Length: 168
Image (cartoon, rainbow, N blue to C red; front, side, top):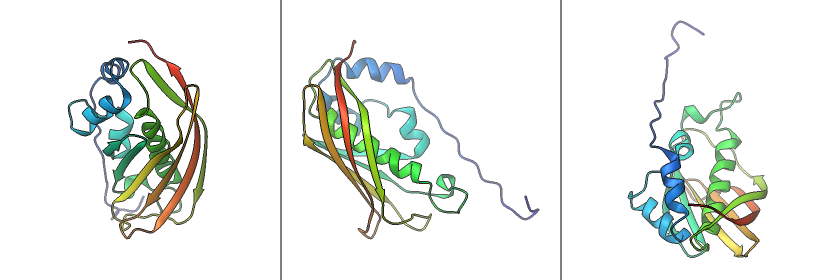
């Protein structure tokens, strides 16, 4: 590292994720996620780590926002595709969660991401919208789109998600 290189750091703090997970098992998905958006329930540690925020939910839809910075960079000096993939996985998953009754959970079976444009620290706030294509009792299907501050599409995804019972 050169002598004139500025050191950077990021501090990540979070609350007990198990408490939130227990709560989610007792509430419908849309009620739980609505409470998360309103700040009544703490965001999961992964969201804090990545700097992403769930900002909107409605039946079959979830919206995340994130402002990429250098801490998201890869070896090429651009935002790592993993940030975009994580946003997409979270948005499609939460979109499916909005359709679930209390006592049901989900997990990704498959996620196909198509990257269309790179991101950097000057891209501004990005928005990721997940939408349910087909809800299901065992498997649900959803799509996601990430756009930058100018509205340009950065990436898209399609996903299959397994739906299963969870214990409180």
